[in-house]
Structures are given as C-alpha cells and as structure tokens.
Image 1: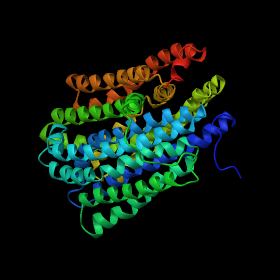
Image 2 (image 1 turned 90 degrees about the vertical axis):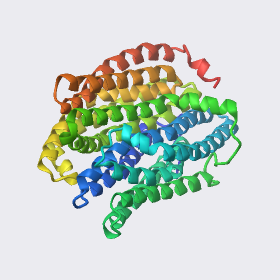
Image 3 (image 1 turned 135 degrees about the vertical axis):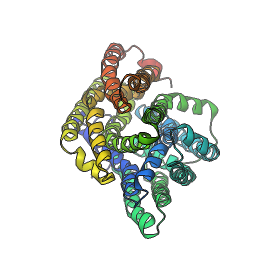
Image 4 (image 1 turned 90 degrees about the horizontal axis):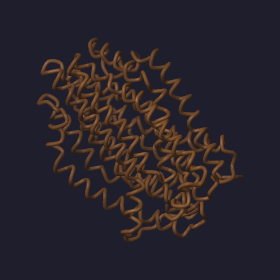
Length: 457
C-alpha cells in the first residue's frame, strides 16, 4: 500500500486535495486553540466580557510569537522541498537539522524577551486598567510555553514536506483535543478563570510538540531529524526564504494592535472595552476563514517547491490553478455562511445584547471581500514557494499598509466601529494589485526567466 505522496508524478488535482485538505483541516483545528479559549473565557461568570477583551489584547502578541515559527518553518521547508525535488537528500537532511537548531535558539530568546516586555506591550496595545490584569495573567502563562508552541508549529512543516500531510494534521488535532478537554477543567472545575485557559493551551502545545519531535525522529521518515550546530550561511538562506511569510504574520500583529488602539481611543472609556470585546469575537470568526486558507496555500508550497527543484513547469502551473479554485470555493461557501449564521456564532461568546448586535454587524462587514482575498493568499504563497520572496513580501506589505492606513483614517470621519471597514477595503485593493503583479512575473518565470537562479539555492 502506498503510504507517501509522489510530489513529482502523482496527478495534480488529487495531489493538491490530498496535501492541502489535511493541511487546511489542521489549520482549522489549530484555530480551536484560540477560539475554544475565548468561548470558555467569555462565559466566565461576572468577569467574562472583561476577560475576553483581555485575551483579545493578547492576540497580536501571540500572533507575533507564532510568526517566528513561520520564519524558520516555511523558510526551511521550502529549501528542504527543493533539495528533495532535485534528489539531494543529504543537503535536505542538513537543512532540517539546521532549522531545528535555529528554532531551539529562537524559542529560548523570545521567551526571555517577551516575559521582560509583556507589561509594556499590553499597555501599548490597548489594555485599559479594567482588562490589564486578565491580559497580563494570560500572557505570562502563554509566554512560558513559547518553546513548545514554536517547535510544534515550525517543525510540523517538515512532516508535510516529506509527504505525510495526515501526520501533520494529527499534530494540531492532538493539541486541539487536549486543549478542549483541559479548558473547562482548569477554568471552571479548578476555578482558575483566564489563567486556566492559558495553562490548558500551554499543555496542549506541549503534547503537539512531543508528537512532532517523535514523528520526525522515526527511522521510517525519509529524512529523520538530527541536531547540528547552526551553519551561518545556511541559516541566513533559511531566514531570507522565510522572511516574507514571517513579515506577513508579524504585520498582522501590527494591524491588530492598531485596530485595538483605535477602538479604545475613539470608543472612549464607556465604549472602548466593548468594541475590543466585539473585535475579539469578530477576529475569532475571521480565523475560521483565513487559517484554513493559509492551510490550503501553505500545504501547496512543498508541492510547488518540489517541482521547482525538479524543473517541472507544467505541474507548477496546474498546482497554482487547482489551489486557486479550491480557495475560491472555500471562501464562497464562507461568504454565504457569514450572511446566515453569525448570530449563532457570536452567542457562543457573549449573551450581552449590545455586544451580540455589534459583533454580528462586524462579521458581515469584515467578510465583504473574502472571495477576492483568495487571490492574494494563493499568489503570495505561490511566489514564496518559487523563491520570489521580495515580490511576495511587497504584495503582502502593500495590503497590510492599506489595512493599517484605513484603520487609522476611517474613524476620523465616521464612528469608531467604522474601523471594521478597513478589512474589506484592503482585501479588495490587494486583489487587483496581487493579480496584476503575479501574472506579469509568473509568465516570465514559467518561460524560464529566473528559474535557474532558484536552483542555485
């Protein structure tokens, strides 16, 4: 029985489905880490809404921490897949080991830095006196688990890159199940409140981390995990390759920070915390859209990179087309769902009538341009997989720049909640910019211009 997928010869449509769907599901399950926490947090008696706002303020910092796993995980796995595609297993083994060593060092350093600065960051990012204690408690415990979060997320890319998307999906499934089981135990049974949610998340990430490491150490893996002293030249190439997706996620944090700060400022003492609570619910819903999309496009990256290494142009073209069709189908379904069921989703988090109405309205606003957003996600990740990181980074930063500017400017002329329109505005503009840039460069690439330079990596 065939246990692995042949990235260079299997039929493209079925291969995209076999790789991207598990990765998509894995990302969807991964979202449960934050969503389940927020659901339970929002339902804590008396302090639920304030605790939920505190968790929302922590979200940009958590995203920023996660972006470092992407920096090394995607950067290393793209190079890793290229080496596998060209048949150079020894070089692939070196890239895997080097990426592991880098993640160990980054995890230790980031834990120290964020523990020392978290208080200042939370204040800067919109935590009022009322919600700061809850945000500080959650952030302290979560930061202590940075080591497990970065290793499980960063090294999981290499499981999928070796043709085992099911095991990659199992990594996040294990963490999500543990988190779902432990959340009510710690929060309600042990009366730990928001601290219990953070502790459950850390223990879930520990379980995922152990599974990833044991999986990669198995002798049955085509390229087993080893540990080496980081090579400076190779580390620079990994960081260069992963810098685009890293900055994409890191700037997500900046946008969320700006949104929280704008909502707090324009909402004022009476309305600011309410707006942040609603924004947290809305962002939770958006994760149900953007994270699976990242799973689809991220899952396709090893396929593209492998065929870049194998110089199979026709397969690259088919992969990109199939991934785009899959993303459009998914976002179309979610657009329709966003018009039908947001009220049921919101009520899971809060029963406050004002918060429910505002959150439902906000979800409908945020999702206005999610179908065009498919093009941005697919094209940016495809360009990264083909080593065109400068262009992918430029396209992503352009969208984030539009989002940031609109978030800051729109509330100056309208009500504070009008800041929610920044998301669909940026998504619509980026659809045109990314589509134009991608097809102009992509055609040249497929004709051979630029491919040879990528093979020298």
